[in-house]
Length: 48
Image (tube, rainbow, N blue to C red; front, side):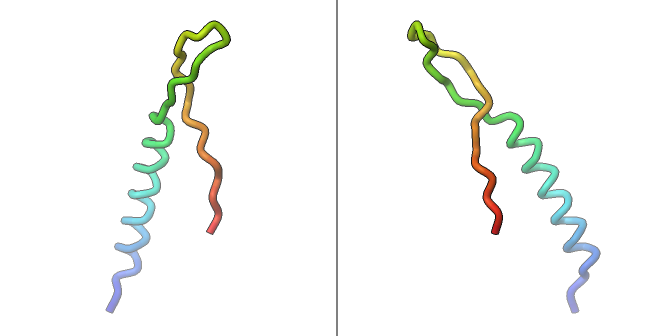
């Protein structure tokens, strides 16, 4: 028998960890004068 409460709890925990990770991802982008600047990584939304 599957413990659905445990599955939902684990899923919520994993989602919160992913949400925090997404906020920390950055990329280096060249500015107009050639210097590098750090910007948040722009990830497309993917709906399954």
